[in-house]
Length: 493
Ligand code: GLU
Image (spheres, rainbow, N blue to C red):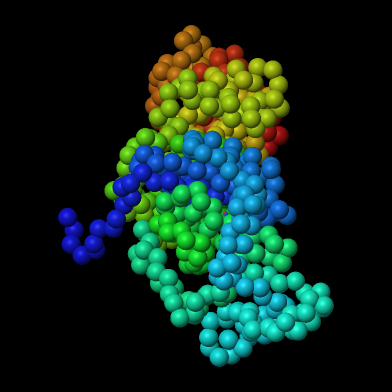
């Protein structure tokens, strides 16, 4: 055992945890990672994973976003035991809590206008104090009548005990202390009576019996507020774990700029759910600093909140691509072909390419499997299979740099394949390697023109597999048409 750092604690009781997305967009990588950690904790402690949709923001919440988030969770293989419970359906519980807080004197009606609040903040800043706002609580009846006559409606603010402090014994961050003097009298209910996020989340976490709240670090300043609300309502707060932010490789907050920021984007870029799951798990957690491929069962078994780092985690698409390629290569050919066809069907690729396209895609599966990073790279490698023979401009440039040489090696290759009976990868490799040695060519100088003659692309499925896939007649005809084009150029030169 290493000395120094005390070992952090893990969760060893059946945890009742929740994932609480706001349905205002697709499922972001950060949200998915939060969902995954909660799911892992529920599964490895024999606990319960509750899905709670935080749709109290009626303007920004949509049923489409909710459906998309659920779909993305399902794609990742994260199943929930309870829910989806919708916060919007818990209005009565939230109202009752506000009423109770009012009776307890824990909240008060605050009449300040936005300008008055801004003036308070400015004064605090000038005084070098935290820019917190507090409402006036000593209005006389006459003053209140006057405010009402002006048409003002109060919001409800929590009466923060400014002399106190709240300590969070956080699983990831250790002890975090908040001095109440720096916490404003936060709003719990708006003037129309609707509850704020802090009220709804606190009441729901308490009433749903959540034992551990595991969420992004960006929520840590809400935690003391939610704990105050719970305590004022007579509930013991749950335990907390605030997990680190996710950044792109440039250490900026992860966004679409980095390639993909949502699960939906990962899916359409052609990542496998298992690769995405591992990449998410490794955002802030590690098992032994070297293993990067776990089955979901292994993740459940090995995950511990005690090994979640508090430093920001980096989500690196390049690393994910490498990982995805490794997963693709370990997938058996048949299964891979099914995954590929499903992906190319969902993205509309096969439909656009007409009859027989599925058959071609299936035939190409073993060859592309060896080279793919993501399914989204399929067209770059195998698109030529669906097109009549044509040569991409970049490839034409390469093959025409030394026309004489190209004609010579393509011609020699054609001589070998034209007469070959057994058109298989093994035999093709033998024949072409033999020819390459006879000509005394470097492999690349000989094989690149073959690739271009056949596929018209600079990057493609391997040359021997490509030849086998299209068969002799098609291969010969492609070689001949390339030679014809080159000859034309040669003669006109
Ligand atoms: N609805 C909040 C969000 O999506 C959840 C915060 C929480 O987990 O308490 O950020």
